Image: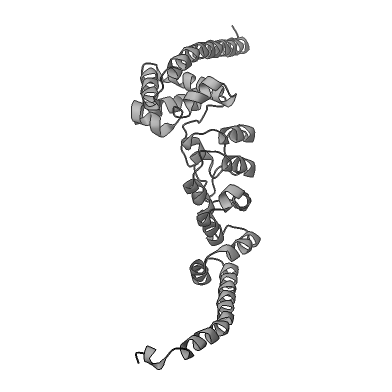
Length: 288
C-alpha cells in the first residue's frame, strides 16, 4: 500500500469510527434523557448525571456532552428541560471533581462541532499587545449559545467581540444585573457593546447600569452625554471631579451647576412665605 492509499484508508477509518461514536452517543443520550427527565429534583438529577459521566471514559463522556449540547441547540424539548443545570461547568465540578472535568474538557476540545470548547476557560487568552484573541467558533454558533440559559456560557460570551452576540445575550432570561454591570463598567467592552446595553430598555432602566456607562471611558461620548442628565446630584459631583474623561467631567460639572442654580432661583419665592409666617407670629412665640 503506497502512501496516498494508506492516507485514504486512515481517513476513511477515522470517519467510520467517528460515525460509530456519534451513533453510540445518540443512542446513549436517548436513554439518559428519559431517565433524567423522570427525576424531578434538579440536584438529584445533577448527581445522577455526574455518576453517569464518571462511569464512562473521558472520551465517551465528551461525546455524550456533545450530543446533549447538540440537542439543546436544535431545541429538543427533553434536552432543554433537563440540561439547564447540567451543562454548567461549576455545577458539574461539584459532582465529578475538577480533575475529572478537566479530562472531559480536554476530550471535548478535541471534538469538532458545537460542543468543542463548551467548558473552555471563561476568559480568552490575551495576545502580546494585551488584546483578547478572537473566538474560534462561528458567530452564528455564538449567537445560538447566547440564548442558552447557562451561567458558564453567559460569562464566556459577556465580552464577545461581535455586537450581535451581545444583543442576543442581553435578552437572555438568565442574564443578571451583576453580569450587565460587569460589562458596562469594563474598559475591555467595545463601544458597540456598551451602546447595545444603553439601547436595551430592560437594562438601561436600572440606575447602576446608567452610572456604570456614564463612568466608563470606553462609552461613546454621545452616549455618556445622554445618560448624565439622568444621574443623581451626588453622582454628578463625583464624576465632575473623578471621571476619567475630560468631557464627562466638564458636562457633569455643568449639569450640577445648573441644578444648583435652579434650586437657588426657587429660594426667593419661598422666602416671602417664611417671612410672612414669622411676622404673623406673636412675639411670645420666639425663644430668642
